Amino acid sequence: MKNIRNFCIIAHIDHGKSTLADRLLQLTQTIADRDMQAQTLDDMDLERERGITIKSHAIQMEYEYKGENYVINLIDTPGHVDFSYEVSRSIAACEGALLIVDASQGIQAQTISNLYLAMEHDLEIIPVINKIDMPSAMIEEVQDQITDLLGFEAEDMLLASAKTGLGVREILEAVIDRVPPPEGDLEAPLQALVFDSFFNPYRGVIAYFRILNGTITKNEKVRFMATDKIYQADEIGVLQMDQVPKKMLGAGDVGYIVTGIKTSTEIKVGDTLTSAVNPTEARIEGFEDVKPMVFAGIFPISNDDFEDLRDSLEKLQLNDASLIFEPETSVALGFGFRCGFLGMLHLEIVQERLTREFDQNVITTVPNVNYFAKLKKDKERMAIRTPADLPDPMLLEYVEEPYIRAQIISKPDFIGSIMRLCMDKRGILTNQVYLTETRVELTFEMPLAEIVFDFYDKLKSISKGYASFDYTIIDFRQSDLVKLDIKLNGENVDALSALIHKDKAAYFGRRLCKKLRELVPRQQFMIAIQAAIGAKIIARETLSALRKDVTAKCYGGDITRKRKLLEKQKKGKKRMRQVGNVEVPQTAFLAVLKLDD
Image 1 (cartoon, rainbow, N blue to C red):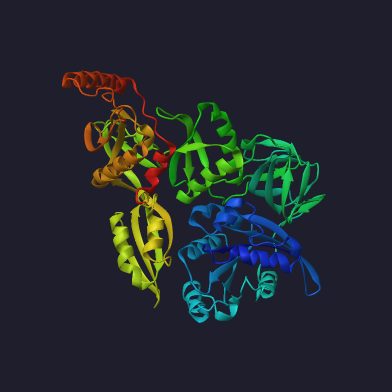
Image 2: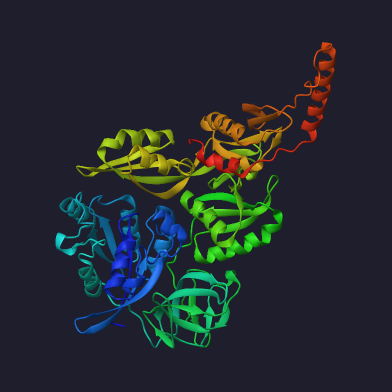
């Protein structure tokens, strides 16, 4: 065990984590040069296209140092705030962390957020300043920032360029020297933490685990403590570029287990794996449950695909533990699922993965956050997941909405624009600190619902890409919220309903009606597109009818002939309007997310 090291790489988005992981794999010859490609560990097409890491990736490397052979388990983590749950799971399986800071950008919001996660688990932190070969690198400034914020001395920081490979050997040797070996008792009963899993169509559910105590052997009977199910370990092994089977794994090892489980709900990430014959009494604690921030309905385009969509979501949940879902029904869309996401990027990625990996065409409803309503009669506090859950205003005392503490780090030039943006989103400035002469940290308290749609994109555009953003939920506060209904032809479209602050309802309703007028296809009859709060209509757009020229055959003759034909057409349109259905295209549901485009 003294020759095992487990560490992860944490950083803000785009600071070079995946590139450094590539260089470490090359240096330890875990991957042959001919198989090498950029972002080697990012095996999803989506990750390569967008240049971001979505999933944590575990891999084992071997390295000889000072005459001894070391086994080094590396977990490469995502940097985007929406995937912070992946980071927290990776940290729980490690003893050390490389904290990467971009020499040209300095410390960013997510750097600090991930660092605090690592400190909570008492990990050994090794600061690395990356991209030192860039012309815009500010090595001394970044060293000062790390010293001021984290208390490290300049000699503790490693300088590297993951792109060229400069300083990578020193990083690997620092991991061996500084990260403590895993502690554990090989003689104790088996106690292992399940930190990830995925579904293989041929072999069933494959779980990744980290052994804290004891040993596991092939064909041994094992028990998953959360579900209390017993299985046989058909295959165990370690994770290199491919899965490498082993006869036995011991305390400190990171590996995988194949048990032939076909039902995805029988394995839970964060579960404790133990022996069925000699079980451990203690579960592994400190693994936090996921807290979804954004909720949206996902519905199949055809109701016949409902069960297929359920299977797809269950398999996706194995690979993405931060996704939660439960069945729901909608008048407009039929049967579907209410899904919880960590943010808008997470929602977008899940929708994209359902289409690509599971061939599911889905409709996504307007995202919203979780609210609480206090009732007048029995003072009961009920959770509001969808606008349809909101009780009648006559029964309602007040509604509470979640508030966040937002940390924004930027250049001083953009303070005015950032403050204006946050004030528009009902934000309250609570703190302003100059980290250095060229970096300022602004702290706001603001409603989570205001940042759900386009806040991050707007922040990036007004700060020319320099601002970084991170947030934590603080509490629920009383707020003046109303339910905005969209009516087409007098009928409510429940999938387009939204809970919104009273002051913004009229503006939002007007914009949404205008957008729908462009997107809803014209019919043979006139369609009224209305936004309403209760019985009060606050905005309206009219979609004119497609008209057939019934008077074309009248050339010359008396005007009464034309009038008679037009009156007949008018009656037909009136009757058609009463029985006609308005089809709402998928683009209309997505348009709500992009009202500013």
